[in-house]
Image: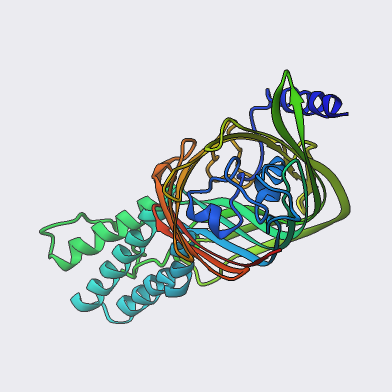
Length: 428
């Protein structure tokens, strides 16, 4: 039986290896992994192995009836957004487009140097707000769930129910908008300076000398797509032997229901935009498959394929959002002084679903225990990112254990990402 399971795992893993793209990032879901840079394929425990690599449920040193290897987790929740998403929300809040329109109306009502300076300032403010987010990616990833994980020496299992909303998009400043604002700035600078600087732009005025308000014609947009996924999964893991080498294998059959969202909005406007929603009522089946190997009492290696059976969700516009297999490898090393190091890497590049950046992360993290506290820190780098998304992200978090109950938190405010995560769990 164990030989059959092992062969089945390797057929699954390597038959899907040539796939070059997949939708949505691999994701980090719990405070421990988020604080450790997103690593977990070889370093997961009974509380989060169902998210990263189900085979880890069978890698405990003692039997479950002799130690508290199992975990009941509720809630586990995380929220991650891009800094650009915050900037777009702030932009809609301040509404610089309307401020420019109001300043143009004030200038036409009373064309003085002061009112011309008002138009000049409003034009510069709008341009300064748009420049940092021009052609930058936006992403959102949030999850809430419950886990029951049972860890054991040669076998294990878990149950998970979760809801995850993940999406991405892009803020697009058009060349026409950029040129129009540059013309406003030059034309009003010419008026304010009395012709000393700037340049005349007669096309900005009508035959009566009134400054034309062209803010209604601005075409810079923010667009994106998202997926709300409801997942029910049951993980199973076993220890098997291959050529006298013991490895662990795990499966997580999952049923997934999805709702798709399509967003289109105008940058700089208080109107955030329109969102089209389509609920895919049918439950779809998919599978996570993982293997792991304890090289010795300190070093572990892991490999996992998530969403082995591709998922396909229709959109309101008639398109679809596909979730295809994701392949990630990891290693974990336990030090002699109550420390833990973990390294994960996405073997495949994960394609965006809404025009944002693709993802292919390298994640590195550490965990150190001080009495009842766990201190965690990490770093991750998106090798497929552009602009801000090519920058590294530093992560941090902590956990506190009181008897069998643990409270874990994580926080990110680095590079392009802002994230927070909370988990309450009980060992049994």
